[in-house]
Image (tube, rainbow, N blue to C red; front, side, top):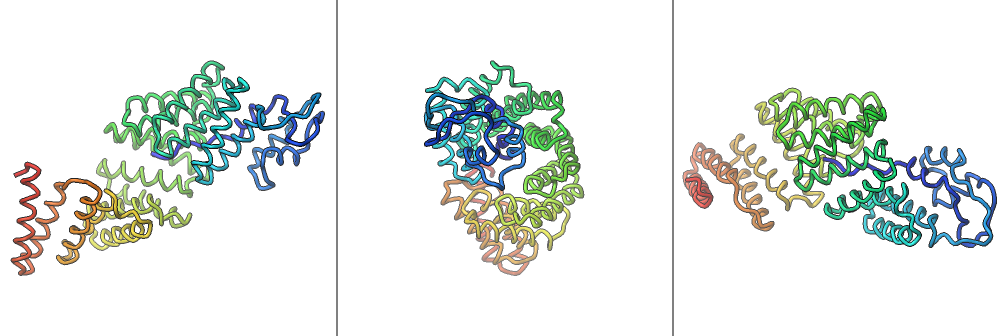
Length: 409
């Protein structure tokens, strides 16, 4: 489904237009600060985003004279600095540190009665994004709902950033299983993006991917294909397809095509995604392993035994390196390898894959699956063809016990 969309720097600047106090230890100053001073105040460096530097150049942050020095900590400016710090920590993957900074910023905004502002809404959106990535969907939705309320009260929902907030709310609802609620948020975000002329942007493409993912879960494969195809076109026009997020889109597009029975189209999308993952150095990731497994599935459906096994084994190598074999996905991958090995007559390797998959599921508290029995039957058939009657009988007996235990006999 994707991660919550990032906060835009333009919004970070929006609430910095008003008077800002002096930084700790300095004397009050009058007039417009230099770009270098402003960058230093906000903890920025010379390599920071051009949009931020241009905004500062435009004179957004004007400091007016004051009668006494003001320390940043317990002021709106202090909350701004802490919000910026949290955004940076979030970008670096330090979720705990980000929440600490955001929590202090929230405390200051509540104390200074500045939470019910655009800056407060931004801060709450940031909190929601981090909580969502940490798996705290309830906490994420609570933060998003408060940000939504503030934006609605101030007439700021009908904006690209308002649409971004609704998209993030939709993603969180999707992850909680509320597909109807998610779809409603995505449709509203799409309406706002179209009204603001933001649909043909990267934000519009991200929204379409989320919308398409929800349509897949609802069984609307045609609608999902349309959403993914439009997102792909937008990314291509903006030169943003050859990115990790572009690869994720291509994988989802391939899965939708595969579900619709378009194996050639699925193979094209998956192959394009693999090229992008290789180009961006992100093939050795969880989603890269998932992509290779998808490629193996399509190869299996196209009777490409060599392509199937190559993709599955490469996926296995990545999951093993990442320490992600002891998962439901890891066990499922091992079963696929077992089927592929059986098709080649390698009964020993097939049984080894099956035993390892079952061991993982036992360790992770997962029950037997119908696929377990099916693989054992395939192994038994291959063993019988190879003249190993004892192994064939053992595999058939084990398959029978599993099916009986599941009430399938």
